[in-house]
Image 1 (spheres, rainbow, N blue to C red):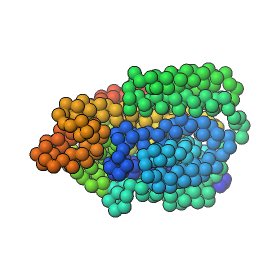
Image 2 (image 1 turned 120 degrees about the horizontal axis):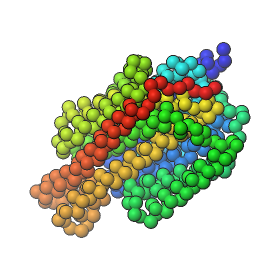
Image 3 (image 1 turned 60 degrees about the vertical axis):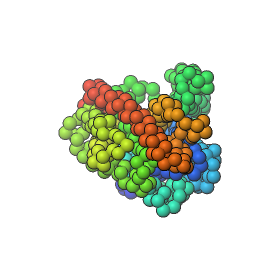
Image 4 (image 1 turned 90 degrees about the vertical axis):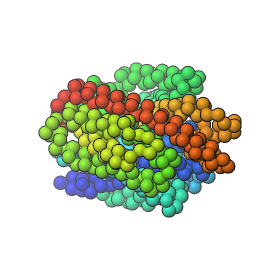
Length: 502
């Protein structure tokens, strides 16, 4: 029996640990954003960039790194990624300005691009039995969701007892353990027949970088901005050239026939939507809890924990649900259930939002995510030829990261737009008004310095309500989109995913 098969479950543990560094990092950061804003005087757009620059670099090179990993060794690329990510985390933790932090966050995204596609592609090679693979992917998905959910709690502990710098330093011991563990237990795998598609790789990096940058800037600015338009035009043009080249290249790195399979495209869209909702929720609710409602960072992390519990429960029962109800209901139903959590938020969100609504809403949202993510991931990976596992995994990961980027950029700009519409109606001195418009954290700091207590309370109510109104309208859009997408998944998906080609 080959080495990779004997230690496949231990190997899964190493892959989940390596993957958790990436997912934990972003959600730990969410709780730290108010502290970073206060310490570094970061505006709302700078907070978006601290999150999104990571995604920009991550998403733009994922497919290329996935293809190179298929050729030169997936385990090798995983270990390179762990080292790069850990060093970048060290730099981020030592940052003393938003510019430095944004720089090291971009380098973290570069390292993460080596890690993420390697995890699923190695799982596909280690687990040859379909039922075992489904269980392995279910565990991978559960760890993905749990690390996302535990991030705010860990971040809350860190902010409560140390400083925001330690949300990055925590990656160093985890990275060291993951590197040693992966070196010991994981087998190396690669496609010996792979050839480097250098032209395709270059075009892929350019068009993904340009499109991702355009999406993010459109959220910060608008679609009418010249920079945004130029970036999107370049991205779409190079994307067309990329497709033209790949369809004619004898050793193309992307199997375009995958996009003809409903078992690949629809679950990819489903996962993107799940991530869209999760990332957006954590980004805004962490600020709502700490800045508007006055909870500590630790308390904010605890309030987000029901999402983690929901993900764990949903992921646990997901394999049985898939067998009992089929793929369409498992994926589409999970998305709709997740949307019901947001529906509860729509009807209950206020400055003094009831605790029961927060806990129940996140529990329902997490349960839907946990229910739909494992069958979605299994369907995607089962649609991919094994020799293209790295590229296929990277395509899936790219969809996830672009969705996260759009969540922060689009939802962030929408909330900020509504917030600014309300704030601009406030009668105040120009210097105070500028501080109110900068961010909700900046507004609270400026108001706290006012000598007039009566004006203090009145202004706090106005800016808090402006922020909540932005979240309210954003969640309505998210609910409608999720319910529609879940319904389409139920309608369009075949009942069973096909097995991967050998």
